[in-house]
Length: 321
Image 1 (tube, one colour):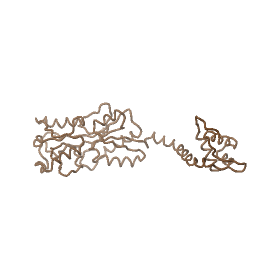
Image 2: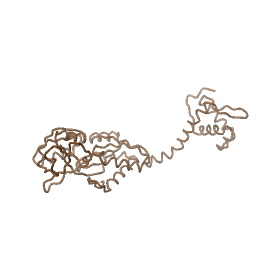
Image 3: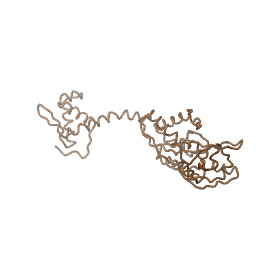
Image 4: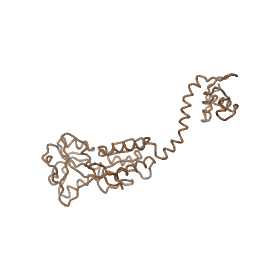
């Protein structure tokens, strides 16, 4: 055989001709199967062999036999043709958002209750969309979204928060409760009074993690003429609760954190002074409005639909905005 061409260009049509001849082992029958005459098929196979630099078939005047090289190539070519045939449908499915990949970031509070339920439901509805879940604090999520390294993210914030340069949908709203060491004197009360909590050492996240919620919590103290006594900072809610368990102080946490049962910790609603609103925190889905893939569009609509449904939960879930 001649040396293979330096610029190897083989069309799918030539591979189909190769498979037809390999299965028929007869130029006449293979040509009829391909709706062509025999001479062009003979020339096409010879051109394919020249391009590859190997002989694929042994010919005699009475028979055609596939060579070991041709036999080794046959299953690979069949797979290539099958994948090529599937490409138009894959393209249509991708354009319709029926397949693809979604990179979703989330804060730890979403992972307690909402995320596991939603992931199951979304996968049932869109089984060919791969979900890549990335746990990250709010500040990190904003950076990831700005760099295009995630497609959307669930963040925790105080009411009224607006993410600069991002689209957002309100997913859930829930009150703040306190986590107390089980041995604390106030732990025996079902609803400890606010004024009895404000002088307790506080375990809280750094402001850079959730600035809007951090400021809202500090406002509770400032409104009452108190200064928070910060005993310890931690990034993750689980770590904050663990520190409360160790007796380092109390913590203000979203009500959903009650799902995280840690020995040595109790959660309590607070008895607020008359006329004073119970502070709340919200969860929103954020995404870049100019980077919405079809799969992401499906997830946004899915999240809004799920958020609008009443759930048998202690959490109050408002309609998405």
